[in-house]
Length: 184
Image (cartoon, rainbow, N blue to C red; front, side):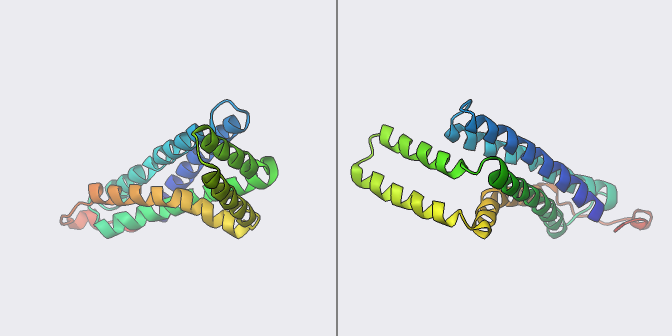
């Protein structure tokens, strides 16, 4: 399982990280709106986490003789998700602190401009500005950035893992010849 998880976790992590770089770069250059960037970002997460399904199916068919329990499928998918999510978090940290240290300011300005253009009241604007100031202060702490970034990607991966485990679980009995090489 270890090799399977590492391979598919790395593939998923690279996929989502490459898209992260492209989308953030396009947002920061004004080629796409930040709100659309979030949509593209989450779509890329779902696409990258398709590797969870492929990885679990590969493990089931190649190493488990076509049989896998829900628990084993979920565990395999969870490890793939954790590897991919960790790569995403590390890439975001490096990007945020070295390439786009003004990201939060640009994001805040965009968010508040959208509220104003939407006709938000002065009271709502004041509340949201205070909220953004609080988040900006929290975002100065790298541990907060790590936690917030995991909370951005990990739930998506967990949903895909759950769905994959439900779809790919397969009960059955193994023939003695199928047991050779199981668990390697």
